[in-house]
Image (cartoon, rainbow, N blue to C red; front, side, top):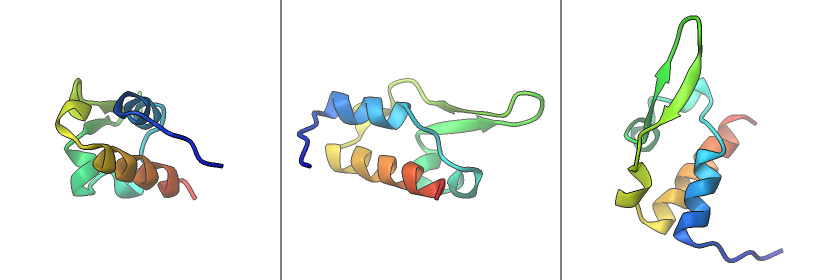
Length: 70
């Protein structure tokens, strides 16, 4: 299946997932968000991070996050 995605679509894909703890220190991942540990473990994407990224970078970020859970 081939799907054509815009930058906005790619951004939504990325924001709909989160990285596994194992890749949170990856340079690409780390510059886009932060992890809050303790009582409320969660990943938070930085506001507007996608505006500085290309479509290719967003796609690679999505693949990194997706595959980190395998």
